[in-house]
Structures are given as C-alpha cells and as structure tokens.
Image (cartoon, helix red, strand yellow):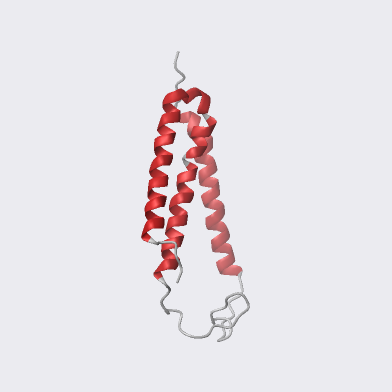
Length: 123
C-alpha cells in the first residue's frame, strides 16, 4: 500500500516559509526605518581589513589565479558525488563499484590532462 500525501501535509512547511520570509522582510523594513542615517565622506569610503584603499581596483589579475580557482571548485564538487556512493556502497554492489572506478578514471584523466598542459605551473 503506497503512502500518499495530500496538500494539507505540506501546510507546516508553507507556514514556516511564510513566517521566515515575513521575519526577513520585517527585520529589513524596521532596521531601515529606525536605523541611523549618518552620511559622511569617511563613512562612504571603501574599507577592507583595516587597510586603506590605494590604487585602482581594476588592475588585472593573472589568469592562472582564476584557472586554479576554477579547477579547485571543479575537483572539489566531484568529491561530493563520492559521498552518496560511499554511503550506499554495499547496496550498489559490483556494478556501483565499477561505475565509481569509471568516474574516478575520468577524473584522473582530466587531472593528468591539466598537469600535462601546465595549468598548475606558476611562473
């Protein structure tokens, strides 16, 4: 006998969502209306880590910086796919093991390609 759910079963979730949105909207409105509104030249200056800003913020960065960041995110996200596999390792059996070996092989081929192209070398 399958378990069925009705729209009424989702009422607590909808109510919690409405209360959360209402809380955020109310908090933003009240702080905007009641908060101090002092404006000055010093207050409107850019402030970062206690160090005064100097120079142009539009100076170009090396493409290597962005490439390493993107590669880190790519390989970091791939690890996330291994957690469900590890949790269900016994239920997946040999088929799941072979599929994960294929997945890891593709990752290693990609990593080998990145190393051969010199994407991680800094000059």
